[in-house]
Length: 224
Image 1 (cartoon, rainbow, N blue to C red):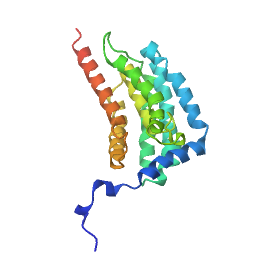
Image 2 (cartoon, rainbow, N blue to C red; image 1 turned 180 degrees about the vertical axis):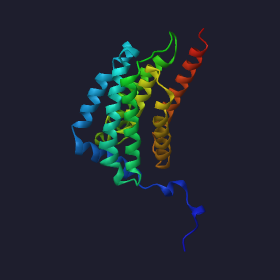
Image 3 (cartoon, rainbow, N blue to C red; image 1 turned 180 degrees about the horizontal axis):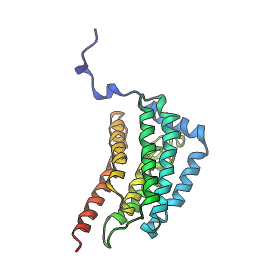
Image 4 (spheres, rainbow, N blue to C red; image 1 turned 30 degrees about the vertical axis):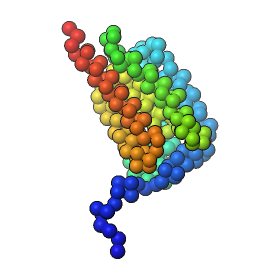
């Protein structure tokens, strides 16, 4: 006779192992190659100008992010993640919704910047750079094969992290932050249960982005 529900640890409720989870990225990349590298390269070219011109090109960058979230919804969650997770389609719907929200903001709302001296426009480009350059390298640095690297516009974590950077530069409405923050919380918990070395990376990026937004918003509210 098996024990009651109270005998289970949170890790027992995971639907996949760490090996299965990381191998999914290899299968994902191999099936779509060279699309992951292409979307990453185009994303880098589209978002890099924000480091210099800020809010003036943020509207275009926001529109491009909308496409990236849609691509992740289809290429990662619908094609692959649903094969190891019961709620894969729900994650796909959430990412598609965020893409639609980003597209609506890009089309209807002019980009707003922060006042001079705000911390958000300084932190934003660093988060974009980490999402585009740091996260794809993180897996191989931790000993995983290159085929398991995560790419912007193809995998969720680099896309979400770069999104935080754009949301900071653009001074975006709070409701655009909800789904990215929820994803990083889920991602961090999942990787922690899988005992992954990088479990705290995306939650730390979210915390940094939220802190920068909060400090800049408080500073702006005090401006006469």
